Image 1 (cartoon, rainbow, N blue to C red):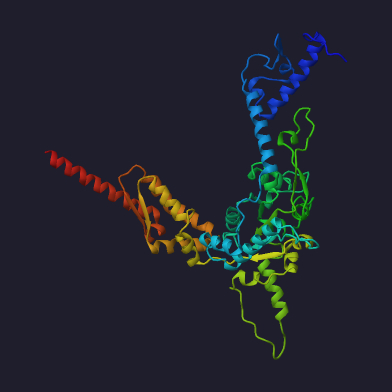
Image 2: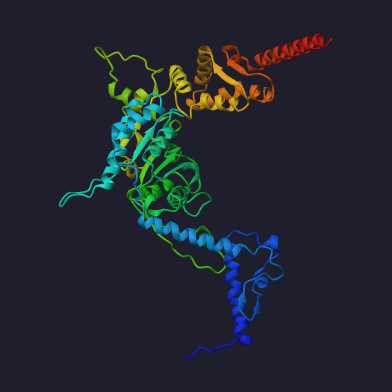
Length: 475
């Protein structure tokens, strides 16, 4: 068919207006432009102007947002660059020379205590990435990945351990809360979005890198514990089942969120696939509130039943009501986890079960004084330094902070709360004053308000004295 040369007919103009207007409307939606703000509707956007040079895309009234075309082109170029990078970039750069001992030494700089947990995590992470990088020899079966389950009270460092490992390995990392997800079709996050959204975003769109990343799912015990009640199970077992396929290995379609959300007339289009078979999944939880008690209580009951004797010659058992939960969690079995509420299938997918120790007062002091850039004391020192005040701590003050934090029984998280309660008013009131040094004492920790009042009164007296002296010298 021979193409006609010349301006389009009226019928062609109408069709072009409809086509280009519809495309323009979709593009405006894609860049998340608020259409109501500009008074634009599909029928208005479809109106176009024609000139001797061809069709120009402009709005119905005036060009209130003419740069959207430039932004759209920039977005497409960026997307192509990311896709090209995903093909060419080695996703495991920086892992050469990584050893289990090297990871353990790195963790020792940041994480207090948890020696056994650090060894297990270091060994498993090193083994996992060595398995990915090395191709099996002829006739050799490739070993399967070992996913990891962390058990421990709130604030003992579960999340922090995993974050520091991902930082050391320089791989994409995503941390999510298990309670944010529900069974498909209900209000809540889709389990697949853990990889499709969280991990892929942290991998900057690099699918190949995301496929070698680490996912940490916190509060896993909240979807494990058996729950009573009525109505559909939108969490619990259903979430565990959805996670099971994700952990085992599943291909997840990557679709742009604007298409996924059903943009006007735009069919869904898959732009890639993420395979989760090499993504390392680590889950953690305190396992403190099951329907039949905490996990430690279940283990305690099991051991009591096993050692219980009746009659003469029975072994007298010492009362261990005050025994640290860690002493029981060390002996956890898959059967204990199933009694708590985990499905047998998902228990079997976590080959490494790692209990973490509780933190005592001395451990909390060590966390405060650890020599790390992200230590709590270093952060407050920097904040007061920005105000022109040199901040220091007496040793007794550190133990007073740790003692108050230990009462709350939320581990390292309590330290941040006590530090905030102690120093917030000082930071607020001393800004812009002439004070150059502030030493935190035990009295300040025990009664911050009273000690702050003393500090301010002392400053006022010094200022008055200096003012009087200046007046005398002027006379």
